[in-house]
Length: 426
Ligand code: NIG
Ligand code: FE
Image (cartoon, rainbow, N blue to C red):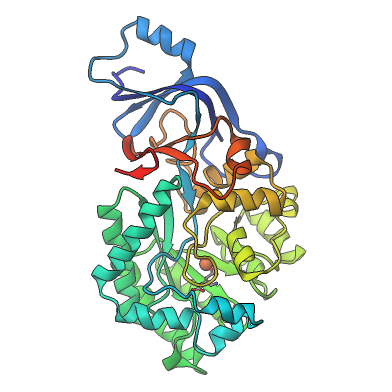
């Protein structure tokens, strides 16, 4: 540390973090750095030092701090990197709690969508909503996410499904990124469903996406990624490929909602087009997974969605054994997974995927950052990385998986600034 730190977090009982600037796969995913009795030094928005309390005392002796340095006592608790949620649909208007009873009566998610419900119901409400309404709804969700430990998230459009309302959704993301401490990474998902006015004319809707939406989205720098719901009865592999290739030609990095409800070939497609991630993968076959492993496509798994759709769970252990980097996300949306809590997702990943807590931590930090192209700046607590830090009401990693269904976040620091204290947004 050459300069005086602005902030020291000390008396950290256990610091747990993955290390490095790229996704971890295979056995490496479960290898994290653990430091007992640790401290973190921060200058501006960047971590400048990490070490033990003994090393901190030595620095104090050398008078390496000045009177302006703020000292925060972590009270002997667990400290981790800020959590990263690499898959959310948080720009929408209108919840869909009414679908719950239909599902309990046996109707499937895709049947509800076919009837004009599901995503299409949210589309109606989102089209009616103003930009300000969307910003207000988004802000509420982001506050909840941040109190649960998330400091960066990916956000998709996809409830507008026409030029004007897709742009409105992406503008809401841009605005939220300015006014909320959460760091948002935008994804264009015009191919989330075929809107009612294009029913039976999917090809024409694909044309609208490729000729009008993508050029406008890319031209106005409203998104970094382009995603497609590649699913039976929604967008076929060929249609998805056309959209993702068009996005690539305009500088948008591909992502795929792949093999979520049926085994359509989304994982293969993700590898073929060089997607940064393939998400869901509940029904992905061995061939698709092999292709992903070969191309180092990150698997973004969403166990909250499996739970809420009463579906089976993705084969996370197989993926890890095959050398696919696994990340975890909420999929926060009003239909298939209405939760903002990555903590719940972490618990489900252990209980249903049989991932170990160390693998889970990597999955919601470094690997999640890698799924949104940010692993060089966030996802671990190391000098040079952004100061995104969570102090937990827990002594160790096992505890946050084990004591489930409650919020165990005490303090959140984003880019060196306090954003949550005692569980409350500041
Ligand atoms: O990831 N699969 C498509 N999209 C979301 C669901 C969106 C919704 O139901 O509103 C998902 O599960
Ligand atoms: Fe999704």
